[in-house]
Amino acid sequence: MADPGSPAGDLRRRLQAAGVHTLLVQFTDVHGCAKGKLVPLAHLEDVLGHGAGFAGPSIWGTGLPRTGPRSEYYARGDAATVKPIPWMPGVARIVSDGFVDGEPFDACPRQVLKRATARLAERGWVLRTGLEPEFFLLRRQDGDWVPADEDDRLDKPSYDLKSLPRQAGFLHELSQALTACGLDVLQLDHEDAHGQYEVNFAYDEALASADHLMLFKLAAQALADTRGMVFSMMPKPFADQPGSGLHFHVSLWQQGAPERSLFGSADGGPLTDAARHFIAGVLTHAPALCAIAAPTVNSYKRLTVGESISGTTWAPACVAHGPNNRTALVRTLTGRFEWRLPDAAANPYLATAALIAAGLDGMDRRLDPGPEVTDDLFDCTLPQLRERGIGLLPQSLAQALDALEADAVICGALGEKLTREFLRLKRDEWTQWARHVCPWERDRYAAAF
View (cartoon, rainbow, N blue to C red):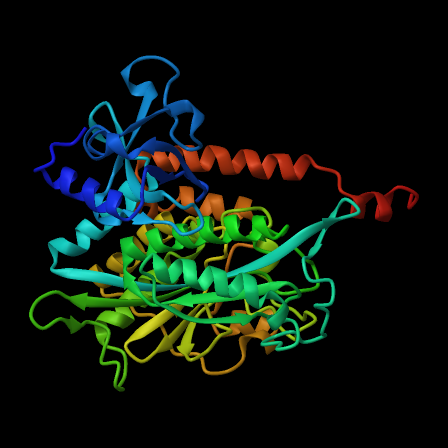
């Protein structure tokens, strides 16, 4: 038990006064899934010091052995992240970093991002991100997945105020839970597909934003389950409807008193040279970034240009940038840019770390992002795009993994161990998909020849 006079003892008293009796010690695996265990509050000092122990090989992406001191994975809590969680009365979540054999574990996604933000801090900089998670509320019907709201079926469901009120109870409970945990919820809306919604919360320092995204997922999963629904961040559940993105709004700041934006004033004016170089790095490394930001076989059903029931997919396939241009990979705005590549399945820690590495490479080499694109890229043919020198993103997970493996900058940011495990797991995923025979194939070929 913590010494009552120590910082851990003071924290324990405050948590007890708030009715907390148990800690949810949470970390994130390579796939971006929350993992952890429950620990009695009396052992708070153990969680903050040594960490809660786990069998390392049981965690996706660690590559740890089954025997010896390096087989143990310890989730060491970050005291600044402790928050009671309303959907589990008496329980407080504490975000944890991975440690192995007493050292920070290089393949822990949160440690990967902390290494990336440390590179910024060495220059006196801090990256802030605003993440915009889109998601579906689903249920099972006749062995298939369908929208939880069976009456949600408009041809153009964006911002639908007929179906939105039917999920108002869930959305309000979710908003209240996130607010109670310290997040500033800005808005909630019905998105472009049946059963699809979006919650926006205020931007924050990059590591905090990733922590917030994981908290959002925990809350949404738990609250949907109590209502008999399944919360889904599958990138594209339905072939004829838009998929779910996880757009990043990105700004870079010079620390000090006062802070100064390195990307330009929010009050107006063009983006700075620093912003243009950062964006150029993001465009240059876009193929490799694709593997991290669109990390599933299903992701590449979203990253295509074409019509859907709402009129467009809103997912960028073209490696370009443009002012308020949602058809480009990077949408530039006043004082910031929106990175539209990531989908809902992306691990927020890895995606942010890879983004930082790409941007810094662009700044260090003073790369040029090329001309702004102001027209609708979804209207362009492939020959027109080639003539303008506008490249396309990888069109499959296999292509994206090849690009990642060939990109020393992005692999360097992830680290050798995590890169190796990520590539191994994702190539296995691609192989399983390539060997799978689906109903479409039987319908098309069984009696064709």
